[in-house]
Each structure stands twice: as C-alpha cells, then as structure tokens.
Image (cartoon, rainbow, N blue to C red):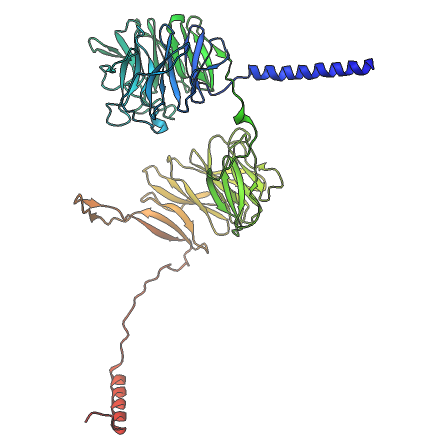
Length: 584
C-alpha cells in the first residue's frame, strides 16, 4: 500500500511539473505582430490586433489600453509621459486622440473629415508622429489640403482643444521637432506603406532640416535609396534607410554633418522606430517583435512581450470558405470543380458527393491548382517547406501531397500541364519560364524574360512544344518555341509585339494577338484621332504545306441563260392557248 501511495505521489508531482512547464512556456511566449511602438521611461506602448497595449520597457505581460472595434495606432507618449496621442477610428474615420497613460477616456483633438479609409499603399490620414517639445501640442500628418492622396502636410493641434495649425512646409511626410522646437526634420514625401524595397526612383524619400522662423531649408541625406522615419535626439538626427539592402538605423550629426550606420540587420527591416530622448533609446519593430537600441552603447536588445488573450482564434475550428475562393478549375471530364480557398485545395462535386480538402495545411498557403489531363493528379503551389514550390496530390486525396520542385525563391504562377501529362510549365515572379518533369521533378529554365510583366505561354496539342511570348530590348514582345529535348528558338522578330500564343487543334497554326493595325478614327467628343482597333488575331503557319486558314472567297450572283428562259416562256404560252386559258 505504501508503495502504491508513493507511486501515486510521484505521478502527481510529475503531472504538476508538466503543467507548470506548460504554464511557464505560455507566460514566456513572445507575441508576434507588435507594431508602431513608442517608449517612455519604464513603459512601452504598441499596437496589437488593432488596439493599444502597454508593457514594461524590459518586457513582460502587456495590459490593454484601448478596445474599440476600430483600429488605434501610431501611439506616442507625451514628453512627460502623462498622455498618449494616437490615431483612432472611433467615429467612422481616422482622427487624432489623446488619452491619459494611467486611465481615462480618449479625447478627440481633430474633427476635419478624414480622407480614409485609404488603399493600403497610402496608409492613414491624420497620422500621429509625435509631440511638440513643450508637450502642449500633438504633431500629425493630414491630407486635408491635398489635391490627391500623395499631397500631405504636417500640423500641430493643442491638447487643450482648438484648431490645428499647419507647419510652413507646403508638403511633408514624416517629421520631428528639434529639442528647442525651432526647427523640424522632415521628408517632403510620404510613402511609408508602399511595398517597394530598395526603390531608387522619384518617390525615394530624402530628409531636410527646416527653420520655422527663417524658412531656411538644408538637405540632410543624399542617397538614391529611401531615407525615412526621422527622429531628433540632442545634436543628432536618427533615421532608417535601406541603402545597404535592408532598412537599418543611421545617425546624422547636425554639427559636423557626418553620417553613420548604427544597426546592420541582414534578414529583416527596421520598421517604425520611435525615440525616447530623455533616456537615449530608440524602440523599433523587427520581424514582428520589438527591439530597443541604446544610443550610448549602440547596441540593440529584444523585448519579450506577451499579449494575454483567451486564445479563441487559436482553437481548432471549422471555417466556411465559401466566400474565400480565389482559384477555380474543372476535372478533365467536368465531374468535379477544383478550387483554392483559405490556403487549401478542394474539389467540389458538380451535383452529388462530398467536398474534399486535399491538402489540410493550416500552416501553409496552397494556391493555383491545376488538374492533370488524365484526371489522376492535381498540381498546386505551396510554401510548406518555407519557399514556394510545386506539389502534387492525388485527386481522391487518399495519399499525402508530395513535393515536385525544389530550390525556388519567390512566387510561382500559371501552372500548365502538357497535354500528355508528362511536364508542367510555369513562371516565377522574375518572369522566368520553367518546365518541370512530372516523373522526376527535374526542372529546366526555358527563358528569362527581361520585361517586368507579360510572359505568356501555351503547350502544343500533343505536348511536344511550348510557345511563349518574351520581351525585347525595344519594348516589343516576340514569340518563341521550346521543343522537348531541344532548345528555345525565336520565331518572330521584334518589329511588332506578339503575345498570348495559342495552338490550333491540329498543330498547324500558332494563333496570337498583335497590336499592329493602325486605323484611326475621329473621336466624337475631343475631335481628335483615336486608336481603338489596333489589336487583331493573327495565325502563323508552322509548316510550308499548311493551307491558308481563310482562303479567299467571293459570293457571285447566279445568271440564268437567255435561251433557256425564252424556250421555257414559249412552252408556257403554247400550253395556255391549247387549253383556252390564254388572253383573248
């Protein structure tokens, strides 16, 4: 009995240890997707799941500050830490609000109708950037006086209430005040939510110093890449730039005008940095987590923050994907439909039977399915192994999917089975055309299209050849053909653009579209020439013995012979006189 009791005690201790281990793991788990942080003394504020949260500056559990269904973001501590200004969606649009850090109700500071909701690439209206050095006004960017979504200006609004005041710069994106409040560092452009990386065109942001009294402007950065997120701390301006390939922190000394790189992250970008001038720190996003950069030691340390929640979204559950279908297709005989929805591949019966989920990869994105010509397999694109590759799965879903290709980096598109089912053609985001052998997975690059977009291709009726349209140096597109066991060769010149190749059913012709017809007509409104009928369908004969697809034809009138007509007329008259029916 004592031995049994001892065994039970040991089992209980083991179970409790396991439970405590699980509990500790949950407490220490780092929450991802923490965004738009700001730091003051011993607290950090950030946006998570559309709400504002407060957490210790050394990491730990977060406490919810707001809970409205609309998003709250771009939170900024006041210089004394008593208030937090932010952009909130409380009454249907985006306005500037301020809330006490301890407890209180958010107070609305701006009331001019916002231009939002905007497309994701334009970000938000009434975007909070910070405070005046005295802490009596909130600095924000507004579209209220712009002609289009790219024209914005910096304003300040008093927290005591009153109308916003525009800063003198006619156009501006992000900005920050100097410690004495007499100057501003800013970027004339705002493109913070654009997805362009390593961009070097006219929308690449540069930073300037602006004297609020004299209106004197001094350029701070001189690089072809974007320089953004300015922060003025002491005698230096800190900002981010992707001039080394990733967004990293840089420092500009206002006194001697020298520039220096501070961080050297190689895998992820430094996003949305925000300064704590009193303690010489900068907090920023990195890979969905928060990092704090110490200006004195010039080192970064991660913050481990857990946002508590009830885990409802993490529980396994059944989700209807009826409204999430993005790719569709049919089985070769049309008995079942093929769809991709919410990251999985499904087949749906046309009339009778169950819907089948063929992949069930909740942690991967499966898309662009294509049914094999014999109906046995379905090819699709999936990132199950970390990069997008082509996978195959049996149409009945009885066996797990298998990976066909390996070694790709980037997006894959437009899977096309050869009619004999032995190969799959596809392209990647770099406009490179590939052919993969279904039996072995061996992959061959057919062509590297130098154009940004426009690569199209089509298999011949028996699968022995692949036609494609590729860009030329002069901007036109030409047609080429790749043959199994051979090489790719061009079959048209660069004189005109040829695109969208399609084979005839017998392989005699290659049909394509080409904008080479010039038939201007007069527009009825502007009284000017309009070209709207330039694209026609063309056919290219693939052998010398192929007849013209539309041989010349001419409909001719039927001509009756005069002699025959007179003879028939006479016979009719004689007959009429014989039976007494003729005219008297």
